[in-house]
Amino acid sequence: MVDGTTKDVGPARVGEHPVSEEQTWVEQAQAGDQEAFSKLVEAYQTPVYNLTYRMLSNVDEAEEAAQETFLRVYTRLDRYNPAYKFSTWVLSIASHHCIDRLRKRRITWLSLDEPLPAQFAPQLSSSKAGPETLAIKGEMHSRVQALLDTLQPDYRAAVVLRYWYDMSYEEMAETVGTTVSAIKSRLFRARKMLAASAQTAGVSMAEAA
Image (cartoon, rainbow, N blue to C red; front, side, top):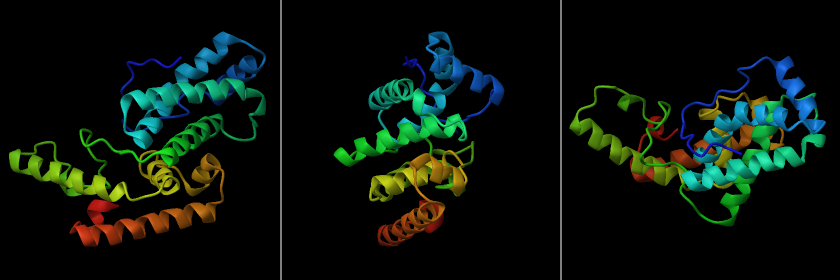
């Protein structure tokens, strides 16, 4: 269902097609149109894979989680409320599935082989990095990785949705099924935990948040 060759883990891009066209696909898929559902999968396979990869940090498991997400989307189409964005609903299913996986076992969710977002290491974002800078960057990846691994699944999801998907508090609340105040609380606590861990590890907050 999801193209296994898709390995794009860059910023998520959702809603790039007309809402009216998307809604037509949803309605047709709800009526049993397989071609319409295939169009929805094609439109959202990259954003969904990006989310599952950032949460799970494993290509095979991310692809498996993406497959499971679309299976759940298909079987729950009759529950979709058009009052909400379809993209939010789909990402909500993906994020909850990943949180369930994370709760079942401890895993690394951010690959050290992938570049960190600018928010985590802005001073190392130069495209002309020399050997010394690359060595420092590799060490920083390891330090930040250790910090992020200390966050529980709900807090990880909040960080991923905020810093990789640039979601508003309202969108995040819809996606994970909670309130805006709860989202703000999770992010505040996550940043506080990162700051405390960073201080112990000798990493500045600018590098850890």
